[in-house]
Length: 472
Image (cartoon, rainbow, N blue to C red; front, side):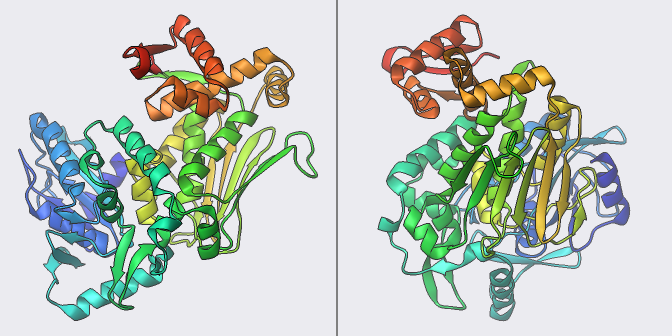
């Protein structure tokens, strides 16, 4: 990214690049630029750089507070509608500290304090009172993003809010304890996430496709997206057909967990110490593959998304709307969100990273897992290939796990699932773990006790309120 930042500064400000001179705090104009980039083509914001490209840096002591203020204001529904999840990154250029972020284009018109900003050349314009320019933005976004399609006849009873919203809150707070959703009502979460909206062109109001995909009941999802399915296949022994198969067509929150479990069932785990913590490398790879195939796909296409597990690799495929077709270079690519509302929601619940980070993580963890590199290519079909080069002894062990030839191997499988779940979700109760491994509470407590004895996990709290997390 260092080379990319230097190139951006060299090329200067423009339609998709903005410099801000700020030393100790963020100027209000930063948020206007975030809004205008969201409404136009997206862009990079560099803080600590003057208009002429001179790097002056920011006060290193103020960095933490500036990052916090930026994230808090973008997540404040009183200021941004819909709320955004974008974080500032830190970099060193010429011995000076700068902050930067990439603002992706949004599928909705983003409003800042009730105002609408658009980007023109290298400036931000308040176009709130210009009805023609506002209509142009609405028309452009309606044509580009199918997730914004409104279904005015979808009612509350068509959604599984009662079961899924508490889970969503828990996932969000596991990631960020003081997450803004903690103090919001169910209705406020839905609206702040942009899942209930109004179309000025059609004069209709209601839940959009993103809401239906995230929270809809299965029959409602099928009626709105008849072709939506993710086909997970394990083809390790029977190369002509398959050894195991799972067809997933439920809401994206449950679909994510089912697909993660399928990958865990048919692959071996490897743990690696990162920043002093034991990290499940397989869980990290699976997270990137599954979140990508669920979030960044064209849901209007009849092409089924696929996850194919073979002896030496995992391949994923999904229909795409390519902006820059070809092989993806992690050091030099411009991320473009296919479904910004879905991407933002998955980031909030900790199942995806800020746009662009996922690709870099996939390269990092694949190198650790197999010593190889993934291949990512964008076209009508977005395709990812992750090498899983296992030793013969590991192959035999994997076969035993998937075929469950012994109770001991089944217990190991439970352990892997528990560790993978805790590495992703932070902490969980015994009841949560029983649900994760689909076994009795007695089995869950026994396995948790074993992991605790081995100093892999530690308990938090006591008695009924006790939860568990991975030991640092």
